[in-house]
Length: 450
Image 1 (cartoon, one colour):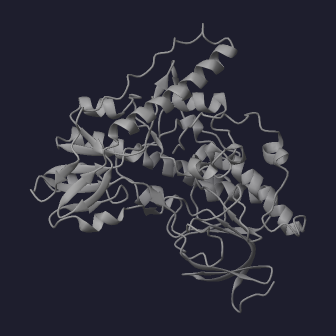
Image 2 (cartoon, helix red, strand yellow):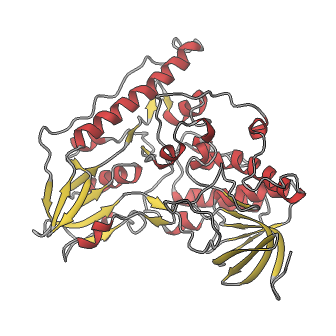
Image 3 (cartoon, helix red, strand yellow):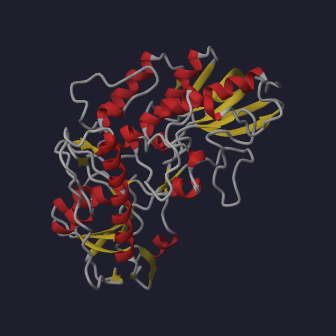
């Protein structure tokens, strides 16, 4: 491998010291592969700097498992605050002795000979393999129409938002009804402000079902273990919104019905802004009906699994959430020039920020192309992407499985075992050392979680 003059050398360079990068670091250490983890800020930087004050994880504490590490506190069924999560990841980095270099922003990754040149704000590196673990939520996905908001209306994303106190006096329009949208609608409405929630595609989920957290059921039933190669349309599965879930000490279910009862007005998704008027889709009723159907299928799968194993006499009986209520004639427009709406929050999703990746790994739509975290560029891997290898890939809990598999693939690449296979396929039967136990579930559409 050619070395840039003055560059430091390492076998594997990991970009990002969040949970995914730290999980990969542990697995590389287990294989005695020398590596470095470069982080633009501090460990768990996104959790430290790009989340609102009251946010808690959507997954129970017991589900914050990482390679060689499990939650050891006294509240396994609780939901970590951001401060608790940061402490959790800091402690994990110390436990695994991760070789993290903080305050180091990667500015370019380029292929050279049989490896890579990596430029950073702290100098140059040469390496044989690179693992991109910088996260899938580096940039808010804001629609083009946001640029047409009239003067006097603030435009924020969940990455900018911290608390209701920062907002200008007045009403709030929130675009998007995934996990972020419903949480912000709930919090801002409870602060005394009028809130309008523009609802597009979404997936309902009760916080608890039949006496257990919904995430316990998804883990036990095997839904979170479904693999990407079992999907009829993995691209669609990767683009599904997150569950409508809130992590709270009370374990409340927050959905469109509870928000309506609290006084939140629901309308269709934002279709555009023209001459100061927000235009809403007329598909609100259809979207809610579809979400209710998905919820029913998911709970049917849980009930069937419980019955097959004789659990029905040991747990509460099924109790289905009420269908989503929708106004008979929801408004199709809202005048943003009256001064009533002072803030629009775009909870319309996130995108990775990978402009520094100077390698040909994007598909025709500009998305990062990969086969379960293995790119077509030999030696370049991904971690932490939605439904990367399994549904659980989106979660902290999914990083261990993915890191084990991809570190094995990476070791095979270094040893030359995958020569002639640029896209790289290990036998899927080696994935987590056992065949998949969860056959394809046709017609059962479950959103990504996180």
